[in-house]
Length: 67
Image (cartoon, rainbow, N blue to C red; front, side):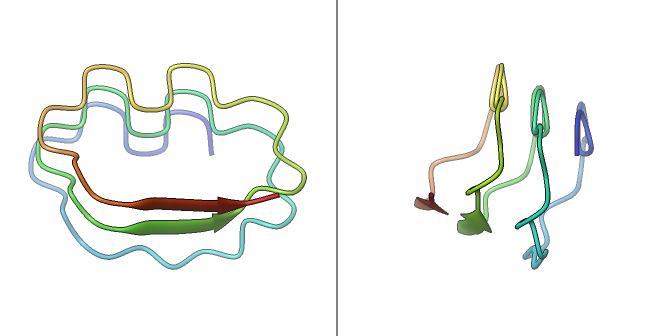
């Protein structure tokens, strides 16, 4: 899921993913300008979230990561 929504200008939809097998989420929302949805991810196998939210402009919702 590295840089999956990186730099998106208008994307702001709820997300629902099975992330139980994801290993890295580096830069997933970095520089996203409009995204502002509650996130609930199973991060049990994630080893890196480096700069996941770097320079996000609108994001201010709850983040629910379980590990």
